[in-house]
Image (cartoon, rainbow, N blue to C red):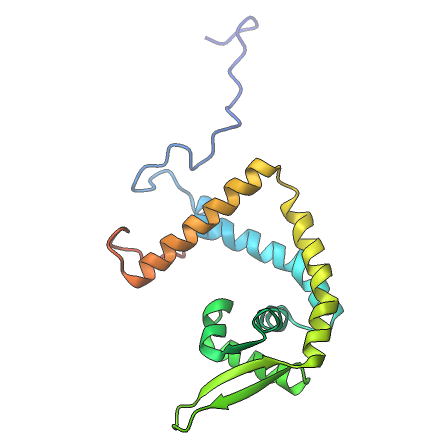
Length: 186
């Protein structure tokens, strides 16, 4: 009963659209889909964190991501770079050609077969650019992560690892996941 002596209860701020989620997801709206929210947050973070420092060094976000991966590895197979970058082969190939054209990486075919394995190696120029950009990248990433208190950071990190493993298992067709995991995006 609501009156002047008994005001309505305030909504529980700790409850989210995910709190009492059933298997069918019957209460989910598209704006509460994990894929929608991750995409929105990922795109916003890319625009506000990564683009400014990538552009500061004359790179696109894709170029920065690949340069950073190659710098970390020193030398990496093209196929491994595709997997680690989570980009498609065509984008990785085009981006590497741009980086190679700027003298930041070198593409090295290896083997004597028609389907040679391609390796990518960072050049001294690429290493110097990476060394200049990575402290800025780390600071900007840390600032965004530190918006969350330590317990939320840790929970989010663990949750993202768990979701990444769920998706890997689904892609590999492991039996410990629901049968229909082929359409994880909206």
